[in-house]
Image (cartoon, rainbow, N blue to C red; front, side):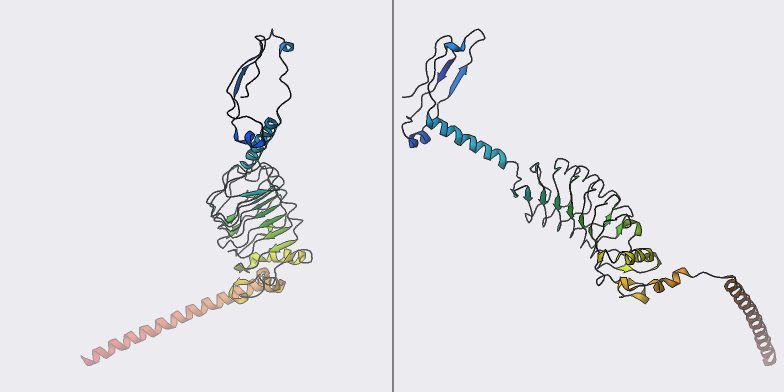
Length: 341
């Protein structure tokens, strides 16, 4: 039976439970129970020189210690990955798990986070505060209607954001606040998307790819795009564009950038007004908006005044003739009644 060493009165006192089995073989080591010692450290006046040499450590005890340490390290690493998610090489994949809310407590060094193909309806404020290494965020195919203000305040390295196939109805001015590192934004296939604020993409100087296709946009302000000097790809097809006079500034700007900005020109069509319904958006020229720039000269005003005067005289003459006719009919009717009497 193995017992703990007996120290002198000057040394630490230990009370030990005996090991139930001997440690003669590896099997016996793994099956035996470890001894439990509770030791009191020597007082300040005691000298460590009085402590006896315990001898070299038992190999089996070293092996068990290593196994326990490895198990604890593995356990600590595993707790940082949320349930129903897989974590590997700074990539956290929680897609297609029927989640109704975002998972908490992600690994601090997460670079790529996929929450696609779930049923998430909202992202809590400050959710990305601790994940400063995040570069890719995939939220497509969920039920999001909006994002909290300042969500990307600390996500300075975020470059790719996918918000497609959601229920966004508008893009407010502060939606991408402080997300200056964004290179790609996908807002496609949001059928209720009706409005994009003129300052929605303000400050996104590095943005290269913007997808607004297959939404409900009928109008897009030029101010929303002209502050994007690095824009290379713009997808706006599949929207019910109303190609009225208000669309002319945007189309003129796009035509000037068509050489260095790839757009889905074949899919972008006008849904109104009736005279241009079905026409490709980029087929409209300055002649198409000629009526928007009509200006009247002095001769035009004089002609309109003359026509108005003539119409007024004709109206007065017509009323006069109608009055005379009515008066004559009344007299004739009265004379006929008197004759019958």
